[in-house]
Length: 274
Image (tube, rainbow, N blue to C red):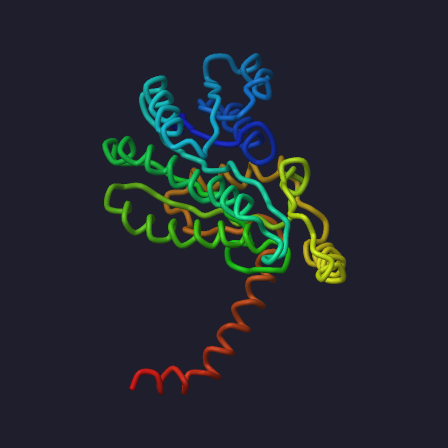
């Protein structure tokens, strides 16, 4: 198998780090980005020149273009571009500040958009490449307390589905990875939380209890590496792929309910047609 060149954002921890290690372990080369390069020092010590550590805040569009260009200049091509950088924000919709809402979208949506735009000219020129967008089961379903996170991921989903159709003629693949609950730092120190309003106190508690029941035992980020390698090595990778055992059941229940409601209200849809 030909060795691949990866560009991975948010490689300091969680999925990004585990996938970088998996790629490096099998002989691939990785341009790995992080806001704090010290988090990548041990990987550089272990894998040497096959790892290119890059300091990057994905919300900086110019820096995104420069980082992608530097990776291409170093390795000569890009085979897998992983938009992994992101975080979760917790807060009811009424509790969100403008700064919190904009920051969530700047990282989770616009960061992925800028890196994608930066990579596409190189991928088009070589006539190949695979863009992995790290979405979430929260990119197709939605729950209280993480509405602005859902907004960022639903937007990423729509953008990426359109992107897949736009770039297919150039030999470029797009896959949305939709994890359930994993033992990453998504809800830990990487996350942010709005100031709660007293009116939502009971709902806050109820939502936390529901989430524990819905997600169940968290998945292992290390095990996810084997799954991501299957996707990037596939001749015909999927547009969407769940990670973890819980998302399929959540999605099926959600879509069955949607279809039932749409069918029930189809007479109203026909009335609107005129």
